[in-house]
Length: 140
Image 1 (cartoon, rainbow, N blue to C red):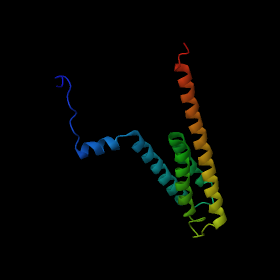
Image 2: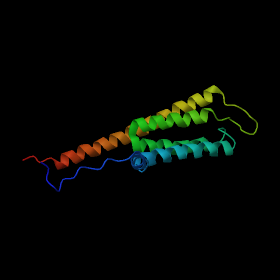
Image 3: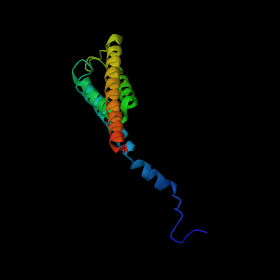
Image 4: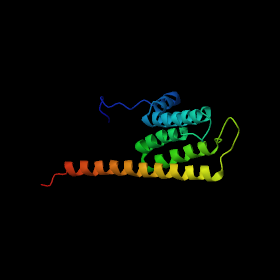
């Protein structure tokens, strides 16, 4: 027999579950990364294409995703940024498309930077956890 103070949790309806999901930290972070990738793509297009320095703006969401999700986040966001930039023309006004070596090199560099940043953030997080565990260990 159950004590009277123990109550069974009330089952949640699907709208409440969706609301909890949408309020989550990961949903916000993914939304911010997608928003920044979209804004970066729009800015690169509006400023004339990939011939100018604006494709470097795409590194901001790559580095944020690497900080939030480690190696996997850095690589996934770098791949999304590089695909967006590969589809972008070199010169929007004249309709000049990029040469394949241009976007292949950009894909490689975005993936390299996203991978290195993700690995560094992941290593930093793991070192913090290791140090925290050592500090909490009682040797007696």
